[in-house]
Amino acid sequence: MSPRPARSTTKSSQRGSLAQRGAHYFGMSGPAEFIAATALFVLLIALSILNVLRRSFDSDESQHLHVIWGWTRGFVQYRDNFDNHMPLFHIMFAPVAGLIGERPTILYWMRFILLPMYFVAAWCTYHLGVAFFSRYYSSGFEFRTDNLWTPIWLLCVTVLIGRATSVRRALVAGLLLGLCFGVSMKSTLLLLSLLLGAPVALVVASRGKFNKSWADLVQCAVLFLAATAIVPAIIMIFFALNGVWRDFRYGVFNFNFLTDRLYKNPILYKNHPAVAVIIFLSALFVAAYISRRIARASHHSEAAFPRALIFLVCATYVLALRIFWPPISRTYSPFYPLAFVMCSGALLTLSDRLASHEWRVFRILQSTPLPAFVALVEFFLLLGTRSVRRDGTRSEATLLRNVLALTEPSDYIFDAKGETIFRQRCFRPVLERITMKAIRRGIITDTTPEQFVETHTCVVATIMVERFSLSTRHFVKHDYLPVTHNLRVAGTILKSSPENPRRCNFEVVIPATYKIISRDASVSGTLDGTPYIGARFLAAGPHTFDSASTPDNLVLLWSQAVDRHFTPFHSLHL
Image (tube, rainbow, N blue to C red; front, side, top):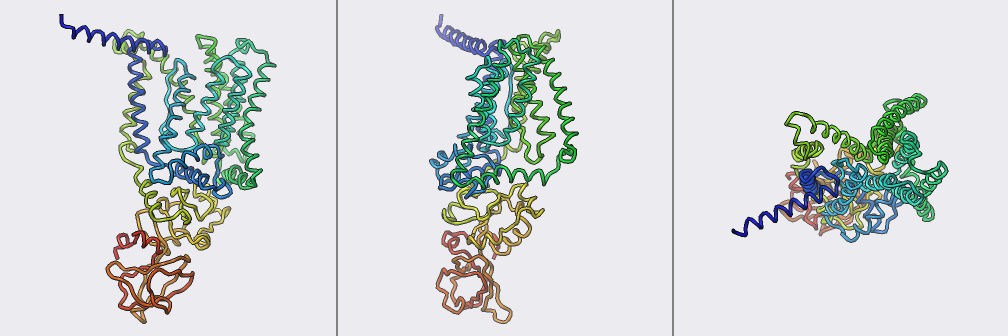
């Protein structure tokens, strides 16, 4: 007998044994379910990498990186760079950004560095669901605070419901929630969800099963709250001791509170707070009733409390978000993983019932449950979206490459939200929706033209020009010339005087060193009455250039742009 079939049989048995061991370890129905789950996990990794490399960069990513870059340059957040987020995210990644250095691919690097937190969130949802199957959400690949904030929150919930309640577990969970506050003050909603959801869950799941007295539970709750306060207290004390408390308070609190003045809540919470509270409490009562049904339907008493708590936390979070929170700053990222834990549990229950049905078509669910098919369908839907098939990252990478080639670290630049990352912004506020609306309402003064002149800003990034005010757009269009698709440089086109075709009268707005250039020929003549021999500093105000020949296609341009071969001729078709 040939030995080849024996080897084949051995390999098959090894594969079967591995799949069986995996199915047993993860509590699956059999090897087929384990193989399906493994295949889906491999597809998830592939899709994650594809999203990192091709999914369009969100403006928040460059904004966060600009603040991080400021830390690497010795700037202090809030004082030297405006920001409206808590600082833990930026402080944590500042050493990493410093090691990577100023390079146009830094957004890709930082996405990959943050990507493991995506799988931390997936690991947490797995443990939270135990027998459940869950998924995460598409923006989990971006380099933004939510993608550190959400995994830490999930770790907090995992610690809270992992085993029996204890002092140590309460302290660890409190520290994790405190880290959430260090990343985002939106963690207030997370704390509210726990404070309201946990007591109700204890009641509906029968507190007696925990073998803890009310005194023990209160002690754990107090220690949890005390631990939660540690991280935000340290952050506030740090900035206060360094004389940055006023800037910190404005960025994190006052600026974000502008949303109450600028945006109306759909249920008119501002005008009818009593009605809003009644609606919230009524909906919470319904959620408590449903959580009681969920707890009673649990086959194992140990699972009653976690399931009731997860449902109540989700319900409380969404209710508070919809009723009390301003629409402009709503985020559902902490809600989705927990919600899909519950949805996956419902899908598995449905899958078990369909698998026992007499119809033969449902028998496949005995080996591969319904959530696996749902996940597979979702994967192909995501793969078919334009955001994955089209490379949406090229424009930002090209912008950074051109900025690094055109400017020096000491040069100021004007952009909307810090999308040039590696350069100081001449205008302090970031032009996000809150700022734009506040400028239109007159709450924040638009001083961009004055800041251009004061800081001698010679470069403007126009990748998000739609966020500029009308006056700023007019100023930029009039006093800056396009040298690339998304960059404009201080300068103007010189036009002949009607009285003297060799004379060009022009106005300089940005004091800087300029050169007069032409597409096809060298330039000679007199500038302000003295021979023009090259780059010259020009103060703001009127100037005159007398050309040695009839001027044709002459351009006044910031000299550094000329020296580095950034000219407007290809854009202006001169």
